[in-house]
Image (tube, rainbow, N blue to C red; front, side, top):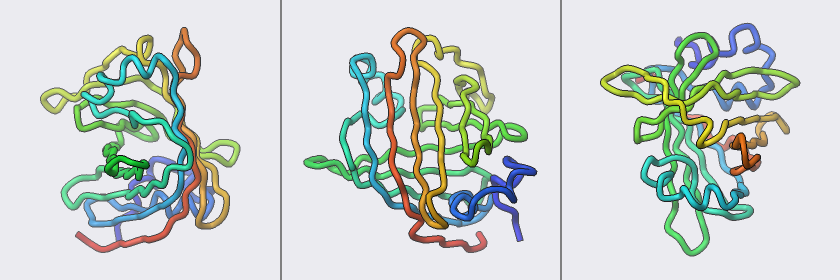
Length: 204
C-alpha cells in the first residue's frame, strides 16, 4: 500500500502529528484519494491588496473577497498520474456564485514544497511540525516554465506568506494564513476552523 504523500515530508515528525492531521494529510500519490473538510472562514485584507486585486484575479492567486464566517468546502485531491496534492476550495459567498480557488502542491525535496496556482506562479515553503502546530514557512516564489522551476523574486512586492494549522480534536482543526508586506505589515489574512467530513480512498 502506498504511503501518504506527506509522510516523507514530515519524516520523523509524521508519527507525532495529531490524528486530525493524519486525516488531513492522508492522500496517497498516484491514486484517486479524496479527503473533504468543511468549515467557515473569515477573509480580511487592506488597501494594498485591494489595489492589486486585478493582478491577483489574473493569476488566480488568493481569494479576492472579504467576509466573515463564509461557508467553505475544501477537497484534498490526489491524482492517478502524479504525486501532486491538490486543493479545491469552494467559498459560498453571499449574493455571489461559489468561488473556487484551486492549487496543487508538489514536493521539491524533503520538507520543501511548492504550491502552484493555475497561472504557473508558485509559493515555495517548508512544512514544519512545531509547538504542536503544522507550520508552512515562506521560502519565496517561483515560476514554472517549460517544466522548470525558476525563482520569481516578488516577496518585496507581494510580501511573505505564512500559514499555521492546529488540531482542535480528532476531526477538527483551525488554520490561519497571512501575507506580511515588508513595508505595510500584514496585508492579507484568512482563517477558520474545519471538520474532516469524508475520507474516500481507493487505488487508481
